[in-house]
Length: 67
Image (cartoon, rainbow, N blue to C red; front, side, top):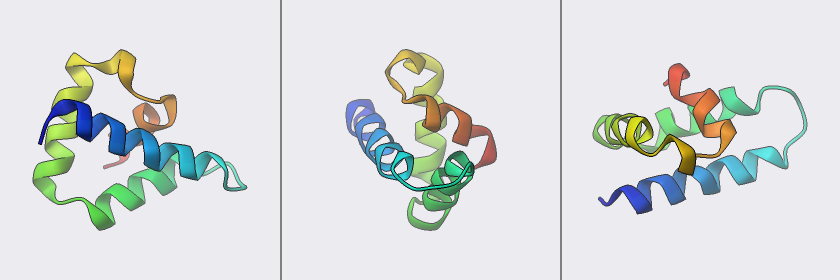
């Protein structure tokens, strides 16, 4: 999967959880990624995050250490 697609999908998830009440949005993003993304996709996102950190939503950046 291309880095553009991974980053876009992760940012879309973050956009959704930003609309939810509470202070645990990063934890919810992490839980979603753990529940619905396979280990390969999560590893690829972490790798892409190192190279393309500026493209990631802040909520995704905060969720990455939790997955």
